[in-house]
Length: 95
Image 1 (cartoon, rainbow, N blue to C red):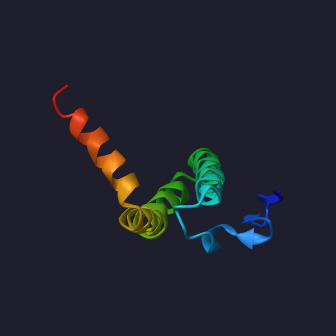
Image 2 (tube, rainbow, N blue to C red; image 1 turned 90 degrees about the vertical axis):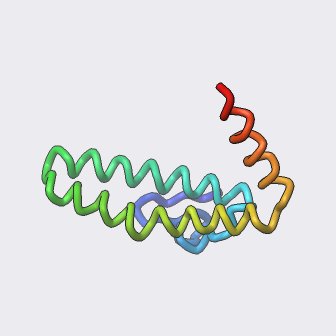
């Protein structure tokens, strides 16, 4: 695996090109992307708080919903994964 954080690529492919949440590489790329996003937010928070808040809002409006939709699509294509997720959520309701 070749990771280039300056270019935002893994194996020469931009982060956003990884769209299948059913593949392990998608989770790795999201972890790398989220850690970079957090570092950017933290840096901006101390140097330019207004830009940090704008960055966070952009993530919440445009980036995170895309990734949630990718997870939902992967779960809908894999009923076994959906069953595990739902049973885990249901088992915690009584606690």
